[in-house]
Figure 1 (cartoon, rainbow, N blue to C red):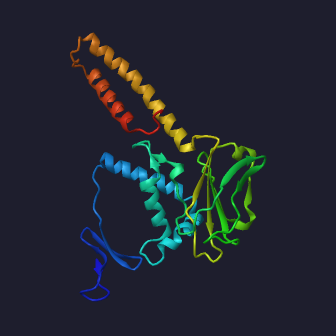
Figure 2 (spheres, rainbow, N blue to C red; figure 1 turned 90 degrees about the horizontal axis):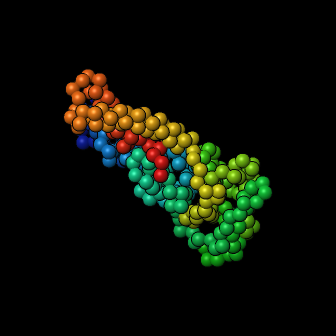
Length: 277
C-alpha cells in the first residue's frame, strides 16, 4: 500500500501493484518491482560491469568522497554515484565474462585545480617515493594537501593516504613491507586545497611490478580449467562414438546422456570467466 502524505496530488510513498514510489535525495522516484526473467547476455555483462566497479570503489571510499564530493554538491547525486558512473563507462576492459579494471583509466578525483607538473614514482628500499614540482602556479598553493591512493589488485588491501604531505614539500614516502612492495601496484595522486573547496583530477602514476592475479581471478581460472578438462574428456568420447557410427547419431540412452553433458559443458565454457588469454 502506498501513502499520499501530501494529499491526492502529492507524491506517493510505498507500493502500488508492481510499482514502488519513494524519495531519493529529495526527488520523487518510481521503479518497477517485478519478477525477473532469465537474464540475457547483455544483462549479464551489465551485472558483471557493476560488480567489478563496485569491488574497486568500495576499497577507496574516503578518496572518492573527497575526489567527487565537490561535483556532487547541489545535485541529486552523491560522490559514490558519480564515481560509479564514470568507472563503469570509462575504466573497464574486456568482454563478458572476462570484464576487468583498466587501471590506467581509473580517475579517483575530478576538479578544477590545475594539474601538477613533474609527477614521478620510484620504488625504494622499504617503500615508494612520490615526487612533484613544489612551485606555486596560478591556482596552486603551498598548503594544498596531497592525496595518494595505492591499489594492490592481487590482495585487495589498498591504502588511502588522504593528507600524506603538503604541496610545498615536493615529495612523500609511503612505507611498505617488501612482500607488498613486490606485488602489482597501481598508484594515483591528487591535490586538494586546504579549505577543501578545490580538487585536481587524479593522475595515474603508473603500474609497478606488472600485472598479477587476485584471488577471484585465480579461483576463476581453476574452475575454468576443471570444466575444460571434463569437456575435453566428454568431447573425445562423443566424437569417437559419432565416428564409430559413421556420423549417424546413436539412439542409445547412454549416448543421449553423453550428448546432453557435451552440450551443457560447451555452453558453460562459452560464458565461464577465467579463460586463458
